[in-house]
Amino acid sequence: MVSTLLEAARRDAVVFFKLVDDVEVHDSMLGFHAQQAIEKALKAVLSRHGVLVPRTHRIDQLLDVFQDGALPLPPHAQNLDEFNPYAVQARYGALDTGPLDRLLAAEWLKDVMDWAQAAAGQHGASDA
Image (cartoon, rainbow, N blue to C red; front, side, top):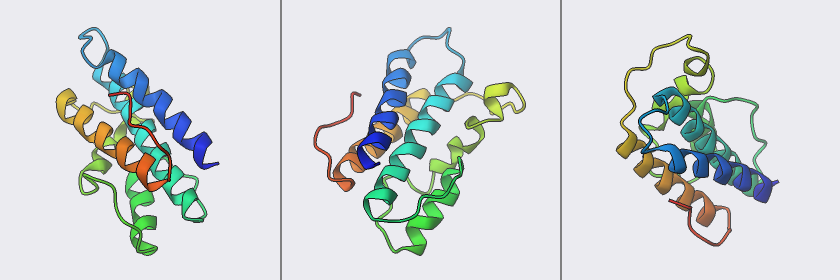
């Protein structure tokens, strides 16, 4: 399960990093892939620690599980919930999230992916 979740996170991260500099790609699509990668990376680490992974797309709820279990938080944990709206609402145009800071999103995503691979006992860095 850990490897499967990390691979799924990596796939979303690859899409994000391939498209991040393309001005024709809407911020909502980039935010969606960043959110998905972070969500799956967090779930992989929780699974590695034997924690029952909640069925949620909300990054803040996943981070609460980390805190409840006294598990080390990922980098930028205090800000990662900024990706929550991209999970569903922004993707379907139901919410205008405003412009995505692509440079900052790329930094946070790379840091979380590197952290997750190390925390889940997987080797190799992200594709950033």
